Length: 347
Image (cartoon, rainbow, N blue to C red; front, side, top):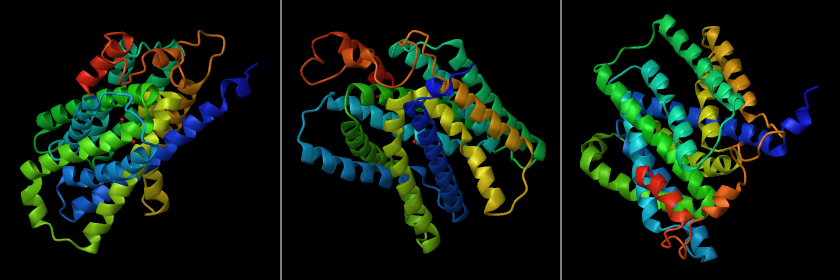
């Protein structure tokens, strides 16, 4: 007989709920971006700049108030900020060259990247049940994509190959970013992570805006139709970035990326109930499939080796804790943090 109470702990349920809250926030950012695009706003880095500024201001103030020593070297966060900014930029840029369907499909590349990186760098082990959950979640998203293709309302794009390459590159950077954030949030400190991600993300964004988007910003006609979704996007992203480290600590980066697969389905429900639009029945099948995959992935197997389960407090992160005193000793902390920070530095 299935032990539902034992298989779904409070932490598991909290991870599932928080994942869907973050997925809804991602959906709201999509609607904001769509509205900005309709208004002729074409400056993706500028959209993210305000979010990084809010992170630096809010969490920087908390960090100054606490006056605690850094638990990780500050220059690791420079790489994190750089990769995070470029991941956002590449994926948004891909929409200009290829179809939304292609970007949705290629964005799933983040999930195998996260699986590989967590297995190699964080020594996370995955049982067949978790891998089955991953497969089911991706199958649900593929059902959405087939529905979009059959409806015939997706344009192919002006340069599909270029757009696909941008999407793959962005998805890869997302994977590296998520795994690096999972490492830092479990071995260092969440407030410290958000502070330096905001500071260096804002600096990188400002430099990129000055080089690539200054002409677009000058040509923008600011009006309530532009300002409201611009500010709404920044606030939603701030809430998303605030919640991501919490979910990473509870459930890990793989569960985080699987949870975000439902964002497109939430968008469909909004289209149905808010805009009274008709959608293909496959959307409902896909939504249910992804939910089943998430439940299977989150299922706790208490008879298995506890080192296999991903997320939560794990001794391997305690042993790999990075602080200002032992990071230069060449021990396990250095060996665990250097690969993640070198390759990258995550809703």
